[in-house]
Every structure is written in C-alpha cells, then in structure tokens.
Amino acid sequence: MVDFGGSYSIPKPIMSGVKSLKVTASTSTFSITSTQTFGDLSAYTTVASGQPTSGTVGLWIFCAAGEVTSATLRIGSSASDYAEVAGVMPYPGTYSTVDGWNYVVFRLKNSTVTGTPSWAAVDYAKITFTSGTTPVLNVDYFTIGYGDVIGLNGLGDGHTIYSTETETF
Image (cartoon, rainbow, N blue to C red):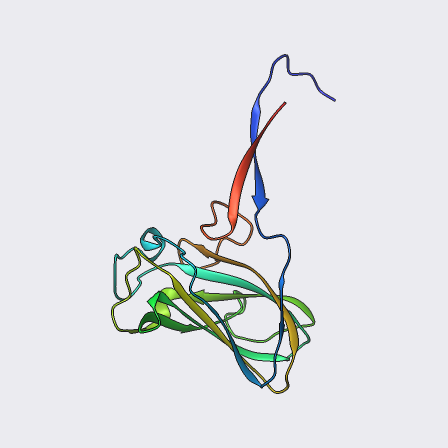
C-alpha cells in the first residue's frame, strides 16, 4: 500500500439496481411498461418537448442468439405523448442478438413522436420485444446518455439507475 501522506476522496460508481429483471414471455410479442418518474431528461434530448434532437437510451438483454428479433422503445410524459424508436446494436448499427448479453441502443433523434411529449417530466416507458418463440430473458441497466452513440453504458452520470458514493482513504 502506498502512503500519500494525507487523506483524499475518490468518487466510486455504484449501481442502485444490482440484479437484472427476468422476463418470461407468454406470447411472441411482449412488453415491459413503467410509469415511474424518470424526471427531467431535457438535457439529454436537447429539447423541452416534442421531437428529440439527441439522446440515446441503452438496455442490456440476455437471450439466446436470434431469440429476440426486435426491441422498440416508447418513452415520454404519458402513454399518449411519447417518442417511439426501434433498437439497434451500437455496432454495426443493426439488430442481431448473440448468445448472452446484448447491448441495445435507442437513438431518440431517430424516433417518431406521438402527441407532444414533455422531456422535462418523463414518467412513461414501454419496451416491446418480438421473438419467434416465447423466450425467458433478462433485461438490465436501462439508462440514458448524451449524444447518439451509447446510453451511458457504465460510464458517466447515468440518469436512471446510477449514483456515486465517495470513499475517503
């Protein structure tokens, strides 16, 4: 151990959700819906309401190769005011699952808007999956990030499930 002659603090990332959500589908098209308060996401979408010009939502899905053939996200201020966008894998930018964990992104600037979602008061999200079967899968780490690449996949200040704790030495 190195002694630096004093004390210092290091921010330490902590996920508040440490277990994935297990989903057992009863049909080949199935959804997860949340009406929890996500808060003000306008800094991510770069607009207060309407069509987002930025922002990427990310989600991890654990499934067999090809088992989940698509994922579509609706997110907004209500079930009648939302943006809808199809998920893709960050690289190569298409949708194709492999065995194990798959990272799916939803680029909000590519969405179709219904109604007038308020990005300052987001409290509705629905993810619809399609499959050729009735799979059992796990989903985890639903986050939003700035820009159009990833949804804060374990980096930065994830708005929905990421917090920090300070450790003093």
